Image (tube, rainbow, N blue to C red; front, side, top):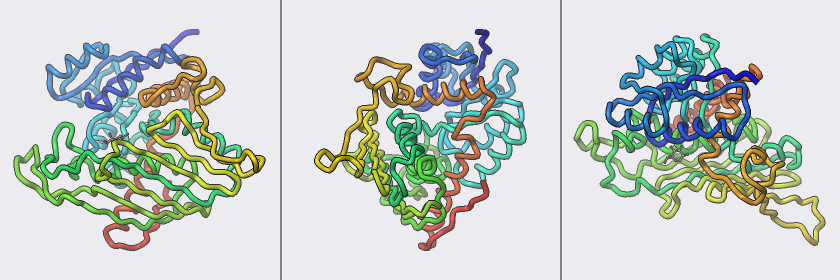
Length: 382
Ligand code: SOE
């Protein structure tokens, strides 16, 4: 088999820069594709730090200005792992240079920015993808398979939560490295864009489009020291958000996210209740899918805890032997593997920018609804 190189230019060396680099390093060892990853360049602002990152993860070279990286002839795909306020500018420039564009979630700060990004990659005709990684947890992919097989019957309820507790301290500053998620100018929103965006992406994938929403948000700590301005500034993000949703398939959704749920670090859970069966998943126990089927014999009927490790489970034939589980970082490996295999077949791989824009539109409706305390229709212009 002849393999074609896919030369990556990665921008951003924080948490996601590491998660993606790890995925690029591992994918070829475990998954087959006609494309072979080459880590050509990594970019971050601080010379010493980016050089160290390039050495540690095996990038051939480094840049300190992303504009230089997106213009390089030896890069095929630009991967955006920077805070949300730079996604638009980088994606548009990368697409204009004919690069494939991969972008960390959320696609953008607002739906208006997202629309420009969709237009940029579609006009350039370049492959594109957004890293909503939880879809590719084997147990979540299994949930999708069970739904596709119509085992649940008509769906009545979709319930999701994403709970954290890391911003409770009032003296935690906002802004800058590691804390840009608290800065509305950099992040766009708080838990809605950062955490509920994951829940919404999974929900749209498993249960279809959302028609309308009714939301409430709260900012518990109203002002924080800003690391970039050096002043105490108002906090513009939502610390917590809860919303009700009506799906196009007639089911009802309830979504909740907060960074003020003491004791919870990244408790992403969802449950779907159908006419015949229900499924539930919990990120803290990510290799298990809970399944209840009312059609089972009544004497043995009950919730089953499916350990999603056998080789007939999604992605699992590529890893270890049955019973041995995988974790968070593997979801990113799966996403790269699917992207490469999509290139092999000449097919797009979801979630594309256009798919992720639907999540932006739900987020937008949620934030608007919280502002004026009324139901908002979700724009359906995909
Ligand atoms: C926030 O703490 C965060 O890191 C999100 O930004 C990620 O998308 C989520 O997967 C885990 O939590």
